[in-house]
Length: 420
Ligand code: ADP
Ligand code: MG
Image 1 (spheres, rainbow, N blue to C red):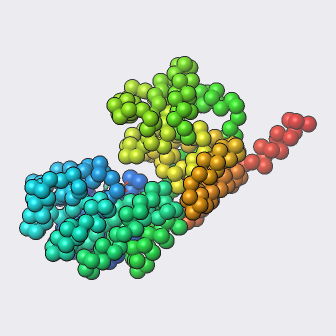
Image 2: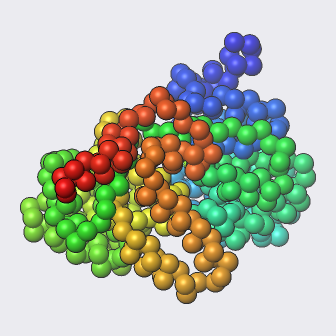
Image 3: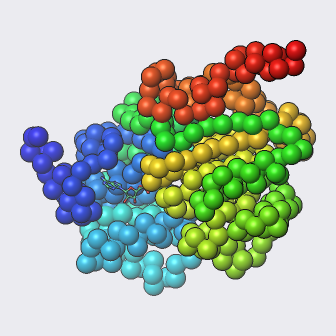
């Protein structure tokens, strides 16, 4: 190790108490400390926050962190404050602050105390804030959840499109983009929109070797099939995703009637019930949560053992994110999706009310899901290929899917023998 490496290891220990960097963190941090534009693509849980937090803490000036969710910003600010004796080390700048609070934030930044300033993209457009930020030293601008910039991402935010223009007004500051979206199309969009084709790019592998991928044909017996599956995983935690609130309610009820402890979760339930059901799942008062995609953002339950998709997801990107909630602890994680072409048609019909450009993107994404469901190749290989990653035949977790364990042509041949 050279003196620089020793130094950042020391800082890692000092601030975060970790003795080792995770994955590509060290390379990313070195790139940031060298004032380079940097692009970080790591799966959820990969440790992206530390990539910008550590360099922000040890450099002069204030780092601006753009993040789409107020709740996430608040969590991070609290976490950073707990590492320090100074509250002013990190701040959030948003529209809910009073005049006095804003004055305090400005004072802490000006005095050099504030190392991290979290802002929502819409706050950053405020002229008053931009004028102030022009007058103080900025170490870099980190754009978390950078896929929000792309219409091909799962969470497009128009305000993200304006970021580059605002950052330009701050002078020559390095930009750090971070995302867990691995599709080449989204990555291209991010680099283009932030005008940083020169960025040092760091991409971690998205392979989750402990997850088992399976697709079953959806028949009218789906409910008894799910019940059988859950009974084979008795006492284990699992999530069942459904497309509609109505389906969520009816599946949760069917499971309850069949002696499975399950609760529903969707945006139609009041906040109190939602919070209660989420806590019951986290505290293991129930085994199964039946949910729409409203459930899962920021849920960090390490021992989710299965994720079932009652209806197909709208993109492989969402499928990867949703199944990624299984097996966080490295233990078993069974990802089962039910597939019928009728569902595809239903989703297409659903989308037909949307603006044409959005529809086209939606259809294209859906076609990839269909291809995944219908493929006879290794599902892991298929998924990772979608993310621009070549998975070798003997890679980690290579035999963890239905197609590899039971090659399709063999099943068909056997079926035919039985029929004759
Ligand atoms: P991401 O934003 O990539 O989803 P986070 O930044 O939220 O991931 O980090 C995920 C978890 O990894 C956090 O609990 C964090 O404390 C932990 N973590 C990050 N870096 C390290 C490290 N070097 N050693 C151990 N744990 C780490
Ligand atoms: Mg993150």
